[in-house]
Length: 153
Image (cartoon, rainbow, N blue to C red; front, side, top):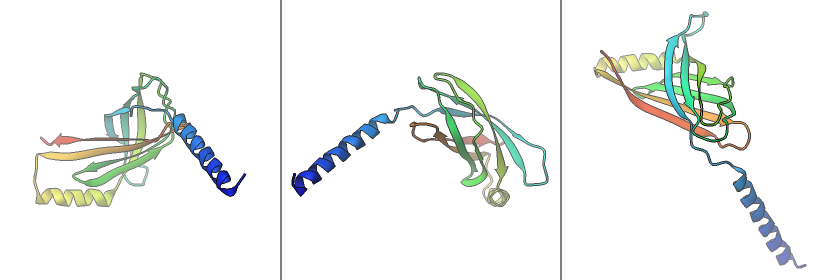
């Protein structure tokens, strides 16, 4: 075989392998995530901590075996709460679970937010919840985002 034939055979083999690997990933709809509750935790001497309960709905036939979640909450464009967790239950196909997470407050970002609120008074706060969910196996990472308004009364 000539060098050119070897190159062509190698390229064909690579493209067959790549096509096979692409077929292994599972098409999935992203989970539906909604905020169930948000409560303050007793202080342990560190910064303020919060417990966040999320309702996660799995709109897929296969179970979601989550290896970890990273998440953040922004208020008025300031990321004020962040957290990570690898303690997430498996969520069966076409079912839902309440996932409990703990998060910490970014004090300096909160102070910037409060300073900004004094300059532009408003009856509403814009919020953004963002999460990156990593799965075990061949399921691709999912990113979830929810935005909205909180009315202050």
